[in-house]
Structures are given as structure tokens and as C-alpha cells.
Image (cartoon, rainbow, N blue to C red):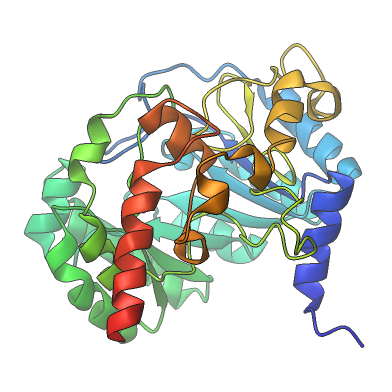
Length: 343
């Protein structure tokens, strides 16, 4: 009997058969906060996909085998039809996660999320209100978000604190952990501050040094939906990433991206069906075809067991999708050093 868990087998089948198992749908880029590490390049960009087209898209995704749907942004609650989209997604059987900054949640919204059994991930920056408000650039945001997290928790909504750790907030990871314990909910920490979706590098100024990131982050968590694309490929001849293989990102303009932070549209759902883009896009085929042997430097690196190389970071930050990622190299070195010291 196979020792591979059922979910891992599902992931491997999706990668093998090119099923878009996991889709991130950005309902809007508009946002009421101004988080300094945000990767959205234009928080005022218009929403260019109509409600009927989004509902049609959900039917397409269901037909193609999508199971996991993230409704995100910007701040998705700023789109007036968010609840209509969430209702339809749940009717179709998707496991829906709402990614929100939490500041706009009220009793009506909390009741709706509880009724729909939608999971909620709330961006949370610090247990110190001063630090929190410094990150969001909005005074009073910490108090509002914390109050609204309690609204969700009290309604038995599955809520989790999603904690991006930057140079601003790095000293309060323990404080957030304690707060999450007091609330009786989970907190997940991420140190993967990335460039903006159009290739801008400004947010990287807030990224932690690798040695500090290793101390805080779960070394197995890349921030991606599920890693381990090569579990079925011990020789290294399988896809290296979920991007464009079983995962896609759709922007408010309708562009289909291989992942949230990998520039380059594969097509637009306002002009083509998602299926046509997913199955025929040269851009997605190019990304899917990347194998470890194509990474001429990385494929023979001694730090490969510690590496969390990302196609997007390699392209955006270092200029070559097939080359090394300097961020991943630094993290791998720090992780290897920590392992040797037994840290």
C-alpha cells in the first residue's frame, strides 16, 4: 500500500494531468490600507471583469477540476459582488478561502462568511498597535482588525492570521503567537516579501536578512499553495513548481498568470475562455517545461536540499527565470548553517 497521503496523490495527479486544482482570483486591486510591503502595483486600477464573466469563469473552473479557490485582492471585500461570487463558488463545491486585511469585516459580513463556511485568512502584522499601524499606514487599523477577527472567531468561522514578517515587524513574532493562542486560532508566518506584480523591487527594502528569516519562518513553507512538485520524479525530471501546472492567478483585468508574482500574461479571460488559455498558452507551456536540468547553475548546487528557489524571484530580482535566485541562495546558506549548528 502506498505511503503517500491521499492529498499528495491528488496534487501529483493534478500536476500530471494539468488540472488547475488551485486558483487565486483577484477580485480587485483596490484597497483601504496601504501596507508598505504590498506587491500590488496599482491600488487604483479598475476592475475590468464583469460579474457575469466571473460567474461564468467559476463554471469553467468547476468543469476543469478546480477544487481550491482563493478570493483575494487588493481587498476583496471592496468589490460589491464579492458575496455573490462566494455564494456561487460554494454552490459549485469549491473550498473557498477569503484573503482579507480584515478591516472591513462587520457583523453582516461575518454572518455571511459563517453561513457559507468560507475559510478566512486575515493579514496581521503585529500585536503592537503602533507597529501594526505603521505597516498599514492607517491609524487605528490594528484595533479594527483585531475586533473583526474576534467577530469571525465568535461565529465559528475558520480564521487564521497570515503574518508577513518584515523589517518593520520582525521583533513581534512572539507577540503575535501569544495573541493567536489567546484567540484560539492559528497564525502562520511568512518572510517571503517579494517585488510587485509588474516587476517593481521597492518592497524588497523591507525583506529580512536571510539569517533572521530562517529564525522566524517555517523552513518548509514557501508561501506557495503546496510544494513538492517533484515527489513522483526522483530523477528530477518533473515540474519544479505549481505555477502554471496546477495553479493559476487571475487578475482584476482578466489576465491569467502562472502565479501571483510571475510577470507575463498567458491570456485574458475577457477575450478567451480559461480552458483555451490554460491548455494552449505558449507562456504557460514555457513555464511548465522548466526542469531541474535546465537550471545550469542550480542543478549541481550543494545547497539544493535547503533551497526554496522561485522562478518568479529569479526572473524579477535577478533577471533570469532559469538562473539562480539570490534570495533563495542566501536563505539556503542560512538554513544549512542553522542545520549544522542544530538551531
